[in-house]
Length: 180
Image 1 (cartoon, rainbow, N blue to C red):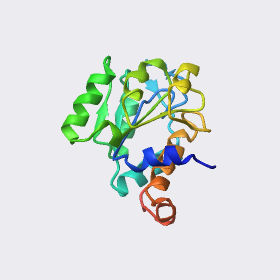
Image 2: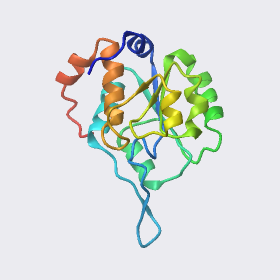
Image 3: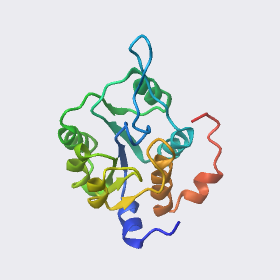
Image 4: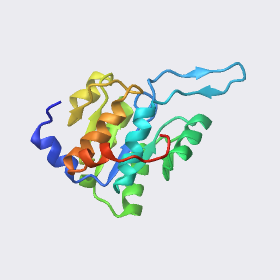
């Protein structure tokens, strides 16, 4: 896939990749078992992409409006330190996280799918909408994935970031020796 130079320039500066969950890391469906427990399905390719980002020094974070034990478990598996669940005001969390990590908007990307993500997307250095995002989110993003949320969209973003920083070929040849 050919990526415009202006997108690669934005991606080159990213030190923190932030993601929404439902509709981005998952397909957006919510499955509830007979005991009321929420079940989420995550894509292993996305997980491997996240591990590659971390390996090459790009921090990863999650900001989501919902709270889920399944998400907490998966984020522990992926060693993601910055996980914010049950967030009503995503923008405040975003602002505080940038202060904590001493990063600028330009050093941050955010991947979203719905209008609640637009406040962050309008400020970060690289805003990305998944292929099945709300049309308004797509209109206000810098770039869009070809894959839908939960079906490899996060992996596309990870590879974009690595490519822009001259790390993709090296990353794809690297064996992490740990399941994503």
